[in-house]
Length: 124
Length: 493
Image 1 (cartoon, rainbow over the protein chains, first blue to last red):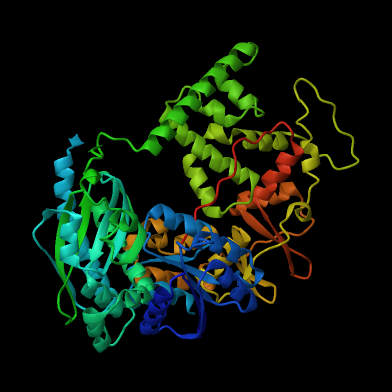
Image 2 (image 1 turned 120 degrees about the horizontal axis):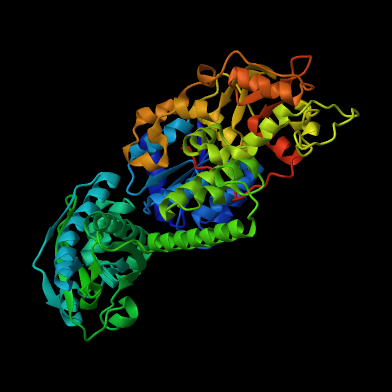
């Protein structure tokens, strides 16, 4: 079944790279949203929840970690799967964001295969 | 062993090549282009020399280094490099990239700043990864800024390089796809190698040192407290017995007395886990961990209470209570406990999943509800029960964050196992008015840590777990105190 996806990253370039890579991965995505920061993401999620959110960690104003906590407080987004995407790869940080409610983690550089591997469990 | 400035310098230069190669591999893998680099002759360089090498338009990523390298260094790309790299990342047409390489202006470079910042981010990520794996004492690299333009007129202000300084410059020639080669390199201020360090074998992690100090201080405090307590209470029974007969004393502190600091730390961690188990309804897997890590003395307060209940006569509300005697002391108000029914202590908000739901779906629901057990069924008709330990046993251990490095698609596939394949059947249930003692007997006989409460119409009303019973007992026995604070349960996946 097709899923909806939101990409949250302060870099428009990175949002497009992620979008392109997700498309190349062959995952069945029917709706995609983009947000340049945490506040925009929360507003969009409130208006229309998504199935999967790909979220950067290092963002100005509201970090990805803070965003995860706030998304988990949104009743409409309790089922949203949140995958963090970042160059930060310390195990401690990964453990922290997962403890805060993220469902997975993808480190840059990423490939379509990596997206396929990490997102396919959430596609059924 | 102390590592000298010269050694750090030579290692940093060698690792620069590996780091640029790792960056090339990363870009190649991510964008499907061939990318290679080759190191040129390392030299001492000044701003004037860099100006001649790189001309007026460059991209400079400033990187803050902590650890063996201490300070800020710069990664620099010439005009051809910045437009090729950025153009490939944003997928500009080849013709446009070639045009920008020749005639691109600072304004066009600025338009590429977002792509160049991302390239810089990935570049620093590659560098950090290589240095973390290969350089003893490496702390962290963080990209602090990306500059695009002509930095050579005010180098200190624009990219943080002092105009009169001499640097170690490691130049590289790089190629992407079929585009002509371009120049890039790393500028190391000489002061960056000043931070000599002790090798890992000799230098303890400061955080560990601090934790160790705190543990030792705490152990010392506890020894003092224990000695003080012993001296203030001369009438207490011999030590072995006193621990069993004094449930109001924090078992953790008693257990830790006279143990070395490290052992005490483990005991304390285990005791904290235990205190959480008592205080809140935690996962079944946490129970299993507790069973492995706790010894008899630490289980003493609750087990003693249960023994008291077993010894005490069942007294229903309204019945006269036997007066306490020396031989048969009043066991708190545990007589009240026996009048408690399932409906008094059950959790009313139970979590449900369908038999065909995946383990992933079940786990997500349980995590969101912070539940240790889940009812499996359709239309509130109970078909089975799944505990967190059932899920832990079913899914691959490589799904745990600590094993993320070895995770493979087959491991993810275990998340698609259906709930009906792992649920416990047949379901043993109790009625809303089943007495506490009967619930405990049932649990012991059946070996179950949770029993669903089902009414006369077969509808699930709630769930009673061993922790609900513990809470009920604790609430009825003021002699028992709880120490420690609750811990955050670790994420399963």
